[in-house]
Image (cartoon, rainbow, N blue to C red; front, side):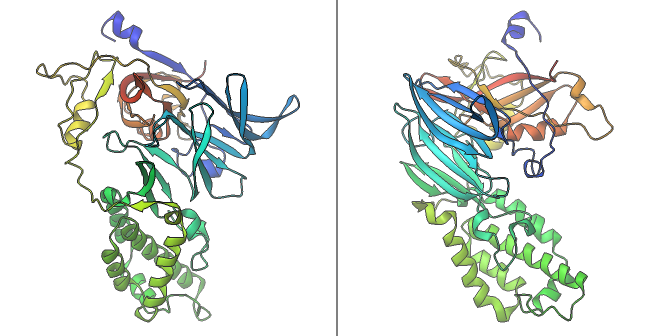
Length: 431
């Protein structure tokens, strides 16, 4: 750091290094949870005075291999989850658009269950449940565009499990669905994020082999007449079928029905088109879409939105530039030397983000990697407590940058409002 003041402003967090040993948690480094199988804990008193506690369930004096969640306030107690395999705090003390600060817990009942339940509780006294969302494989609330609106991202995994007799594990990913509370109504806003779906579509199209696709179109679509096929031929047909379904779902869930049915017509056996078309629609409507209150008609316009201010106590203040397009704004906040004397500096926030969960990835097998030394990571943490951007000061570490996508914080506050905040975080192994 350049001076003692900045050195004092730098917070140093020392935390235990977690290594991925449980397959269900290692599908993505971003899927860390606060408590799993009785291990891990979180305890925090909200701005309203309600304390949220997550940790191992106990039988007498002994911890069980289960997790619990409870609220306490004014010498009162509410047990909201007595025993589950996993309990996670996805959001703490922020406003999801429900008119009150909330905590969002996601719960997995057993290790065999591929789905999670997303429970949203008001933190006003007395705390109460406001909404439950089911059917997702994992939930993540974030201010995606840094525009002051928090979206809930998940995958509609429950609805496609055993679709066409294909277990969920057969698919590379379930259809993404993006939700947001607008005037307390839960709205599907997936159509506002079409570029994210387009990247998945481009990847899938690149993976579809022309010969395999021709062979699949010559089949009956159901793959019910496979007795004359070798194991390799059947496997190839099933992989092609899965990729076609994933591509069609990307179009459909992002609000482009016409493109979805055109892609289906181009890639599916024509004699089976009507059957699969109806089946896809019915399946989607039975999933998370059955739990929502409305669907957004807005389409993606990433450069037309203005952005909230970023409070900064690390570099001495960030120029207020909410007028910039998304790409230019991201470049601005990630460039520590960028200043603009024509714009006033933002005053400091009242509180800093507080850690809910951070995980540093293990180095590749046989390598020491950067775990032996501290690493400074410059973070922009959004009002949902998620990392919106991350930059390493010093030697690059892609694995660490990727891991920050799964870090969770209680957001910073200015007055009674959660705000975006930029600061340096020193990541070091446990001493």
